[in-house]
Length: 315
Image (tube, rainbow, N blue to C red; front, side):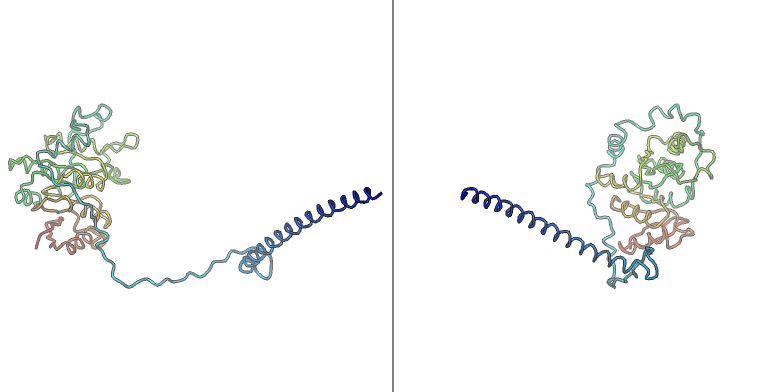
């Protein structure tokens, strides 16, 4: 009997122990749920207090009043916007053409076997058009500087490039003219140049530029670089290709002109001249002219107007 009673006590103890563990587990679970519910309710109440109208339960989005932040009145250091990359030392003039052919065209002239069959019938024998491309500024600067390397930033159909090629030829100079342009024109430019053709989205501007160079017998001195101006000028900086004469005539907005002028100046040889087009436009001080004046002010140049062109002159 005593053994039987002991077994009953033991069984009851086991049941009580299990029940107490289960109760403790349930209590912990309930506490966890309660805490989670209370925190959720608080954030939800906070949300609805600002999002729900007292008159109904429709959720109406609300927007907080923007806060005005105090901006420092300190003058902006324009120097931080300058391009500071150090360029390689300049290579000799005689190596410029070879360097570009090797690094860009796998050692062969882009005029080799020109024109390709798929565009030959679309090209005009000569279609040289430009803006101010025969201005006196070109002859004035070519005669003054006698450049061995000319860099033209923005070439379009090659009017100014072929004109400079003829001027250097007349002076007996062995000059390389590097024409930097993506040769894509701008959206809608074919509305004004209807004689050019588009093939699968290609406006054929590069090919007509090259045809114009060939027509002027200048393929030995003019090389197109069909990439963005920034990427080419940065590559020239890396390769040590500098210009004695650099013309900036690509984008007419301030940001484009500012970028091109700064990049071009890095690769201007000592004694060289930096100049450009579109000094007088409807944009006035919001475009090229503003970029030119700001650059001249920062670097201590004077700006000389020559027709529609600007020329940076040392004090």
